[in-house]
Image (cartoon, rainbow over all chains, first blue to last red; front, top):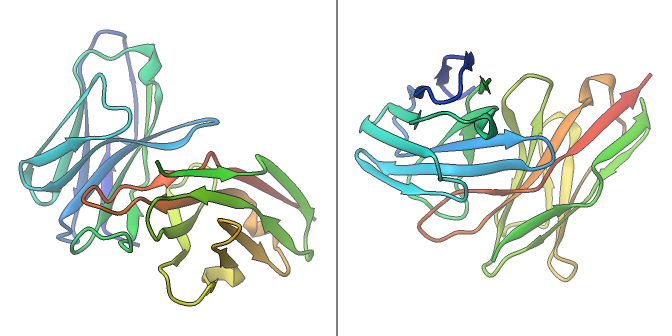
Length: 115
Length: 114
């Protein structure tokens, strides 16, 4: 398995509170991604990073921000959590230059519940 | 725009029988295509990928998929399934370009009965 860890693995929080999810990799891969998984929707890209301090938005970025100050860490922040952000969040990494042949490797996921 | 359609949301088969999980895609580029498997409460594991080499791609655990350009399909199959194949399967396409993210289908839940 690729060396990807996510923390926390489970979190329950209340509407309006800030939440930060962490993805940590030991593979020294350049590219990192945050997806959310919801029943009937598959996985949808939130944000991605193509290097330290280089990030961009994905399909469902509203309400989320990210930061990458080190190659190995990619943080996802919900500034003010809402119930619609209840989901399972997956981090992924890919190696080398980004081409259409790059394979993404996924972390174990974080289950977030917003009450 | 790229998209992926998985034609069956649920498939149920008996152990030892063959299974076909269907995936159609649309892509403006020569696509790279992937199948991932997700066991309950686990992350996604890569089964196989197509990257414009041979049209028949062999993956792990006896799975294989065939790329069909004319039908824009990338169906996954296994000749004889096992109970442990019970999981959700996701087809994905890479749109290429500078973004590098994957576009996923909505998943097919495979149940293998004893």
